[in-house]
Image (cartoon, rainbow, N blue to C red; front, side, top):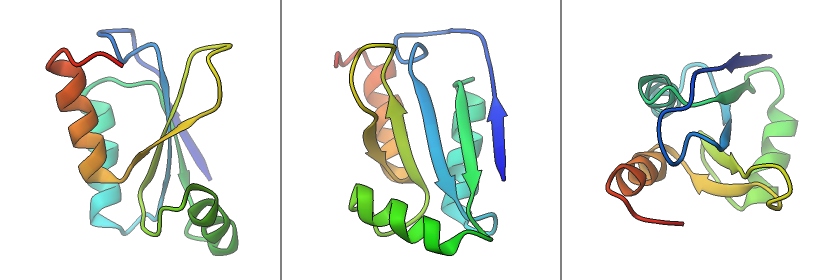
Amino acid sequence: MSLSSKAPKKSCYMDKHITMYIKSECPSCIKAQHELLKHKINHTTYIMDNNLDELESVKEKWDHPTVPIVLRSPGAGEGPALLIGGYTELKIYFTDKLGGVKE
C-alpha cells in the first residue's frame, strides 16, 4: 500500500522528494511520518506490513536493518536516491537543513 502527500515548497530541502518504507505499528515510523507532515515535505510512504520479503530486500539494498527506511530522491537529473536513515537521522536531516547546512 502506498500513501502520498504533496505540499507546497517551503525551504531548501523542499525540492527533494522523500520515500519512506515503514511498518504501520512501528513507533519510529509513525514519528517519521509526523515529521514529514509537520515540515510539509513531498513524500511517498510504503506500508510494508504485508510485503515483508520485499521489505527485507529494501533493507539489504540500503544496508539499513530497521524501519523506517527514509530515502531522499534528488531533483531530476541529479542522480540516484540517497539514504537518510531512520527517524533519528531524519530529525538530524531537518535540523541541518533548517540550520543552514548546505549539501
